[in-house]
Length: 525
Ligand SMILES: [Fe+2]
Image (cartoon, rainbow, N blue to C red; front, side, top):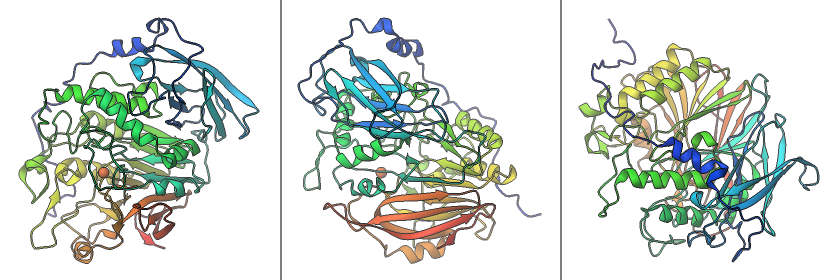
């Protein structure tokens, strides 16, 4: 008898790590109720321009989108606001000149949430562009553009989006976003490492504002530093974003409540996580459903683009078990094969499988962080996998690919960031049988700036591709991936820059692939 595909080991042991965090959702909700505000300042004066972090929008649906800004006249010095609630008005128009007002209102920006503003709109018309702006006191924000998605039961002919990740401020400029802003996109998907937590270092392109960040103030100032970048702001103002985090929004390679290492201070990691997650929420265009509750925050969610595509935004950090076998690159070790090792956590995995089963999407897109394909990273005779990626959680990867295949999920497409390089991978049914059938596609997108200028080729590339024949493409430059999706075809263009150490680098497409609907096969263009 041939071995069944996707052998998944049994376990009678319960997952001890799930749901261990006590939360205080009531306390968090109270901060949003009006009675918590006290006297609201309606005509505030500011020590400097309060909209220096720009505007953003995100998590669109067919009738709704979130508008975001934060009042911060002194961005990297705690924001520079007096500790009092401030009234912010907003308006939404259906023209670029902001003459035809569709909706307007007022919200209160509170010191508890760093004077951030999240306006969750409703009752909008589907599949339309809108323009928005905020006002506080006599100051008016930059203008942003956003859109709603097509109706869930409609059949859109086209979706254009780009995905990006890893924007280390010190190692490069955000020139990639200048080009992305010219791309006429419906949506931007960010796969994490929006900030990096590390200390300021000398001799790089730019400089962090402080030592390694640990406290709520630290995280707020770091987000503010990143968000002062003009290209990043312009891209946020150009289209709605769908964001998820990876590790550096908190701590390199953390897993659930396990930090990378002891930081040499007394801050419990759960406190650091609560502060990092709170600052993330404060700086992202997220819905109230993602409001953090202590060290917990609901970030995995679903977003249908009509019946054309359904996005499943995953969180592979908050619920994962500790990296097996000491993390790093390892030969296959028993812990990585354990059925208890999980990168999604059972609850998120069940949610994903239920969602995939019900999805009406022609293309089912997993927007997530770390490489899913089981790439052997050692060019010598040994086999080495990254324990921080899906191969460190082998049974979870098998469960997902098994679900794709057995439930005949339409066109599973996995979008990945994390490793600062471009890859195109065919996800094969059984990575021990390299000729097994392809059950999904993985596009790994490079970094915006992390890693510095980079190089198109890697000296180890041919060996790596030879021993990993499901890898169809590699490139080590900076940039992003632009995707155009139609009912019949998915196209991904790897958009890259020669350098991020100096401004003005042009963008070019170094490689394109298409996938035909119903045929999980990467076709080079
Ligand atoms: Fe990164």
